[in-house]
Length: 290
Image (tube, rainbow, N blue to C red; front, side):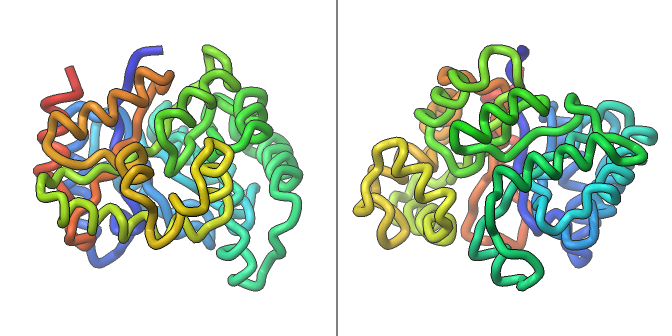
């Protein structure tokens, strides 16, 4: 599979207050040659309408949901939304679905987070049985552990692991096999000042390390409880969040390709999470997209 370079952005991309800026940013990513824009958030009532707006505003770049929660995105409504996007923008939308996390699901008081693997199988069954089914080739799973990775290979186009170091990418490739798509998210900080860079990275890491799916996954890879405390150890940060100058950050991204990734969804972290990191994505495109 040809190497692909993509961008990953959170809820800022879906915010009504930043809609025009988001569309401008998407147009530039399209022009720069990024394969896909992954966005997350806003799945309580189906797929956000902004996906269609981004696809309409651009000419080539793909869009992926990263990740629609199977506890909150109704499968029939989701399948219909995917069908509509496929009709209007053939081959450009990829549905990413995942099991989310117990603290998040339980806090909404609509569901109890039990048997997430079983629930994922049932959700995929529902996508298959919908009036407008979602083909396996147009969906991927947020997979961390071996069982979910195997399910990704069996019933979708592949896997989109989030918050993972290169050693997980290597393990995922081994489990998936050669053909399925492997598209890890990789957060980066293009900042040479170590104090500033670590501050940005640690603030980002702190929230994810509090979620059992991510912390348990890192423990499976050999990281200790000490690595997971207080926003993460420097050693964990250095492998999980490439930071520094452009050359050093690109080396961290390349480590995932070398470990077996087909596509890396790059999330640029900055000190200002309310603005789009356009300059950083330009620099990364120059270095990574040929």
